[in-house]
Image 1 (cartoon, rainbow, N blue to C red):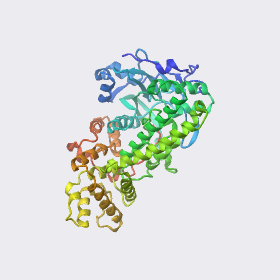
Image 2: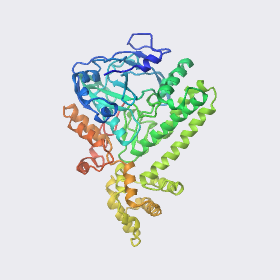
Image 3: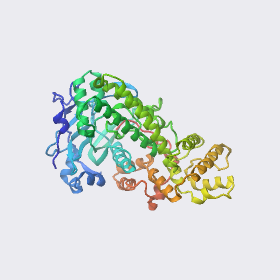
Image 4: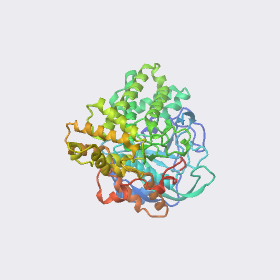
Length: 532
């Protein structure tokens, strides 16, 4: 095992070696070692990721591997550090933030020459911990481990998770900040990504009017993560910002496609590479609701609700543009990038919705009407988005091609297939569902006008509509059992979610189901906080 330390070697660091909280000026990071834990044990690791980056699973399972992944041991080339950054939290500038409980170990270079930064989350205090302990609990660590790898399998740009290690120590947390703190089992996740640079890394230097380090960070980022754009210049800076906008649009569009809600889209939680980062109070929408947020801190504003994610991404990009302005000294190039985001998210979102419905992308005008009509229908009653789209692909070809069926029989046959997606006990003839049946007939006409054969259409729908997602209650069940020492549900979910688009008929009865009623208001299933 040998690592490199490109970020540390290339950029200025904190001259202070004091690991206690302090303001860090004119520096990108602070050198700080993980705090060893008493009795680390390996709970899970990602074989697909290990294979992808060229790590022998036997090393991960070895005593040395567990010690490294717990933060108890360093290997050659590691220079552990915590990054300095700022950010806008819930729309307000929060000043210096930084890696308060995450420590970067260094960069692993795979056989293809790709650099992968390893970061331990929950590995102890850093100069950015403020007055926290720098640790993480099992419940949040398990959720991050599962979700990182699940999102990758779904095709969503994301940071990854190599391992989940129990610390053998307890951590005190007040889950809902209501005065009910308790001891919880601690854990550490090894997160892996080409880089963990965030919008907030640039914002902190702009806020302090430190243009020298702002430029140094931008040039480093371009050279190491956007080398195809060429050497830094006004033209390549513009191309870089434009690409960040495009990547961010693609990421958010994928969130919307699979029903994922990030829950805390602060600018310090936005990756400059367009990766989903910082899995805190996230969730999957069960009953489709654009105003739903899993984050208890956001219950009053709903700033980061499911339907707001595209516009919040745009707001965050505006803050990044403001931070990068000293490199441009004119607004036009940055505005062109922001305009690109607006057009990209609009076009990508419509294309994505048409793909989910199996409608041709070359008929966007008529397709837009079908999409908008369906979005209005979501408000009629509680409908499970994942099951709705998946069942839509199961409707037989004869339903579309029949010329003898009456409108009533068409509606009832549609209901036979898609009815399992509805939460309410409701009859298809209910008067309140009339707009939905108007949509069904409109949708059927759109499919009939398509030249795509039925089988190809159904297969393409199933490639963009997952059958299995990390439903909140499934994650909570795995947490509850893991806290009791039973890892079977964790490993079952890990295996299931590695192939979310496959039928996996032996798993259907257990995992292809709507949220049970008991989970509607259960903490961890319906509500989460930033406490971990």
